[in-house]
Amino acid sequence: NLDICRYLIMNAPNPNRPQTNDRRREQRYKTNSDRRLHCRTSVDEPGQDQSWEGTTVDISTSGMRLLSEGNFEVGQPISTELITTRSHGIYRGIVRRIEPWFGRQMILGCSLRDTIPRKVLQELASEGIINRRSDGRYSIEVPATISWPLNPGEIDVEIQDYSSGGMK
Image (cartoon, rainbow, N blue to C red; front, side, top):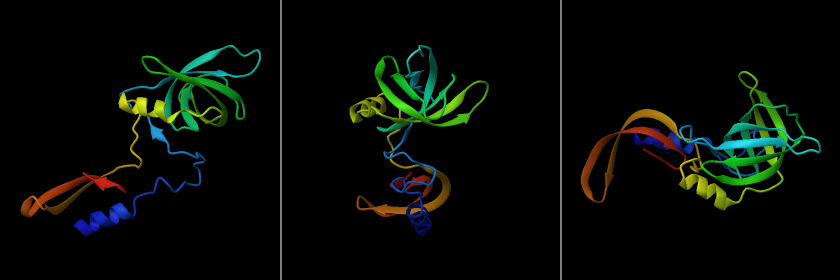
């Protein structure tokens, strides 16, 4: 059973190996669904003064995905303020991708001209807003046996999930 777990861990997707559809240079961190990272986004062009409220889907130091309403176009410069109970800064970026969503909402994939400081990401992680886990976890139910120096013999357990960094 432990061999199955080792196989699953060794063959888990590697977050350090970019997928073909992932252009982000930095590690992405998903926002936790129970704690929202709100955003206020506006087009960063002369004569554009309207802003739209939205929710951050994921974030890195060099980009983000946002769920928002509004009239955006690929290649358009934007400014986005990240908001929890307070502002975490305003960051300028460029819309790189638009995915239609429900109603008038869309998901914007944006690269940033202003880097989000790692300190801001750490604050968001400390507040439970983003998950800084470096890899995905996969749910499984596999019986296994474990042993360690503080306990003589083996103990039967069930592995509930795993990632390339470990298992629970």
